[in-house]
Image 1 (tube, one colour):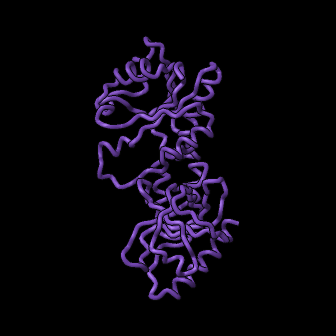
Image 2 (cartoon, helix red, strand yellow):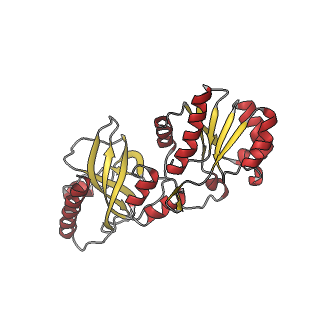
Image 3 (cartoon, helix red, strand yellow):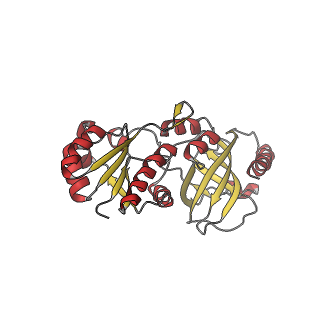
Length: 294
């Protein structure tokens, strides 16, 4: 993998803007017969500097690896972001890491990418430091849809507002939460709607409520469903979970890793006085989700 062209950024979400940066690196690598690598940081630098920040991740490392592979990168490079990397100077980041350790021949980043202790490095610094070492660098300007720049923060704002359609457009795919199916309180099973419960973990919290969803199973099958994302106010104690109910599906998923895509926001969470009222509403939610996903 030495002599590679590296797309360098955080790439959380791997949205349209990130994809342009990655594609530029991949095209450059192909033109010169070099390996193409997409680099990312984990944990996210914000998590290091502001550990109390609420969860905001759009993709797990496993999801990013699949997305980078689909983009035709030859490898994913993960920089572990901790005190050591945070304290690395811009000079050492370029010379010791990119050039000496990874043997990079070229770097592609977004124009706003910064690196090194105190964020001392930017694309101009990268070019100045890299040129004598045989490292070339290119910067990609903001990618827009119309007049607005495509950004992870815009996607997060859309999801917090329950606007799945905008998030899907900017990501080029639905926002998806991946996790291991865990045992819950079996309330859904008692009501006739058995759910495959997933811990939301480090993911951004979209607007709490009911969603039309698609589930991707370990064997590649895709199933339609409706899901509650939130704290289930009708039940005590409140417990934050993603609870998808898949239509016409009766298999055991416990312990398996599945991915749940949020396609449409149906309604906000509500507390019901009795289970009969909840069941009537759940039937309506499922009918609406079926219609939307069809």
